[in-house]
View (cartoon, rainbow, N blue to C red):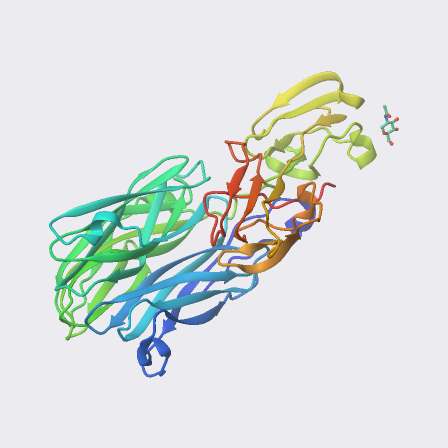
Length: 477
Ligand SMILES: *[C@@H]1O[C@H](CO)[C@@H](O)[C@H](O)[C@H]1NC(C)=O
């Protein structure tokens, strides 16, 4: 495990952060522990483990996990591993059995990142359409919205699946398209294989933060044999810290034997290398896999998502001031420097004036400026207007809506009870990831950063809002 920490001195002077990451392998459940996934048969049953980071992050990171060991008896197999509560110090992983079948081991790899050039998307569904029919070759497309406009690359990991008992277990996932708003995932199966549920994670990145390989397949993995997988990667990234990633995207196995596969020894030298292993009592016809590199750049700066920042030197250096609303006289805030560079949140516009009270010459900017020279005495900048509006329709029994900072109703809780007035987002202390909503209640969330700036409407509980990023409120300075 390694963690590249930020230079704490810089943090005191500037408002921006630099990326941080940490990674490792972990065990969800292992053999001879007598854990309930192995010894019990009720459904669902889960075991939760806590993974602690080697050092605390400055803010809550995103966590991508990829399953790398599955060890189950034959039969109607079903399991899932997913990330639960994430804090600055660590995170929870839930290993879940979805059938009565005994699950012996589930291991996973994890990487936690505070980096605005990556985004983790988790998805699971029982709505697998034709994958639930048993004839022939089938492919289903899943479209998932995201708000990571710069995304160009993605790495997918199959982290959960449920099959009905038939001779073959076949599932293959791949990313077919990444646009600035959506990713399209294909799920395929063939022969006599009946898929009931799938769960996967995608690590999305840009050309600069993520490199991804072609799609590969290991065919007919013999028992007790370690294929030596070696993947070339471009030399463009030699000046960065690279973390090798390897994921399985699916497999084709014989259900009359135990499902037991292990992706191991992921390493980086002149190539990305790893291997697979199957036990003597499993029959693996194919493992679908792919690899990638997380590119960690210590020179990358993460600027404020909601506020403007002015710098006294080019390249976002020198002294700085954070601006979260309009300011009629910048001198009162103690700023008298020439502005040599500035950062602007996405989809925002700023007007800089050479005189106080929005007088003098006006410069309009919509993008970060790496090098400029302006005397600025007043700034017109609209603060973010985000709000929560709740309509109670004949609802008397359950008048409270609960908002959580994490998926699955975990993390920090913020609640609004009927009768309370919540005017603006300055009452909302965090980014909302899940909401508990009773019947006959309508919740509107408005986030102006979202390019369609109409409010999002929810009438049922949301266990994980991935397509809608409600901005974390920043107290204006
Ligand atoms: C702006 O603030 C500075 C410092 O407090 C003050 O000297 C100056 O008169 C102010 N300008 C206006 C137009 O109010």
